[in-house]
Amino acid sequence: MLISSLVAVMTFLSACDEQREPRLTDEAAERLILEKIETNQVLSLDLFNVLRNRIDTDSLKRLLAKSKTREEFIDLMAEQTSSYFKDVVELNLAGLSVQTVPMPFMGEAEITLKLLYSDEGTAGAAPYDPVQAYSDLVLKRINEEKAKGHKDWIVVESLQTPGSHSHEMPIETMSLNFEQLKMLTTLPHTIILDIELLDTEMHEALGGFLKIGGIPPVAIGLLLPAVQKVRETAATASQTPFEQGLLAWFDDTVEPIMPSGLDHDLIRRIQASVFLAGLHAILLPEYQNKNQDQATLSVLHAQYRAAVICTAREIWNNK
Image (cartoon, rainbow, N blue to C red; front, side):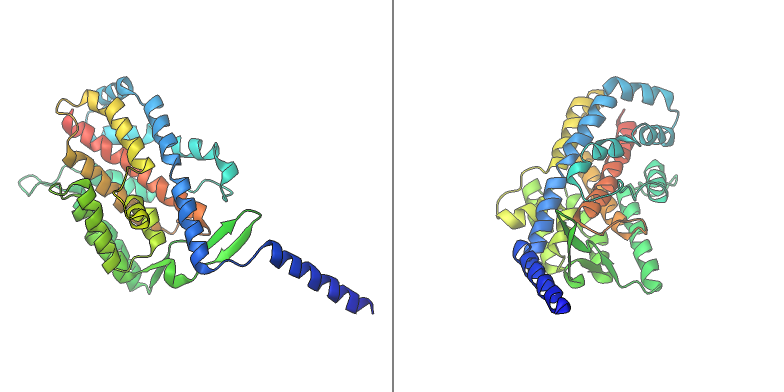
C-alpha cells in the first residue's frame, strides 16, 4: 500500500512539473537561442564604451610614442586591453548561464593573430594581406582537424532556460561540417572586403551565400548577426551593437590621430577580420558551447580581441 501511494505521489508531481514546464519544440528552442544571442550581443556596447573610456586619443598617442615597431604597438594595445572583456562580463553575470567568463581566444589564438597582423610581408613580394593570411591559417586548421577525423563542430549544445532547465539541441541543426566551414573560411570575408558593394548589398550577398551553403541560423546569428537580422525581419539591416560600439570608438578615439581619416576599405578589413576570428573561436579546443550564453561570449571574446588587434595595425599604418 505504501509503495502504491509513493508511486501515485511521484506520478502526480511529475504531471505537475510537465504542466509547469511544457516541453519546447526544437524550433521554439532555436528561436529562444537566437533571441538570447541577440540580447547578449548588446554587451558589445559596454565593451567599446570601456575601451573608449580607458584608451582615449591621448592614450593612443602615448602608446604610439612608446612603440618602435608595429609589433610593439599591437602588443601594447593587446596588453592594455586584456582585462576589459572579463571586467564587462562580470558586471552582467546575473543574466548569464555561465560559471566563469569564457575567453577561448586568450593564449595561442590571440598570439597567432597578433603575429599575422604584425607581419610586414616579404620585401619585393606582392603586398601582404593579413586578412587573406588569416583566412589561409583558419583553413589550414580545419584541414588538420579533418585529417584527425573531426567531422562536425557543434556551435551550441543546448538551450539553457531559467532554473537550470536544459533543452538538448539536434546536432544537425547546431553544427557545422567540414564543407560548411571551408565555405565560411574562404568566401564570406571576400564579400565583406568588396568595397564596390554598399553595406546593404554586402549583407544581401552574404545572406544568399549562407542560404546556398545551408549554414544553420544559430551559426549565422553568432558569426554574422547583421545578416541573421535581415533574414528574420526581411528589412534593411541596421547596425548591430558590435558595429555601433566599434564605429563610435573609431569616431571618438581613433580617427583624430589618423591624418587620412577612416576610409570604407579600412573598416571593411576590420569587419572581415572580426568575422574570421569568430569562426576561429568555434574551432578552438577551449571553445565553450554547452549553452547559448557560453557560445555567444566565446565568439564575442574572439571578435572583440580581433577588433582591437586589427585596429591597432590600421592605426600604425595610417599614423
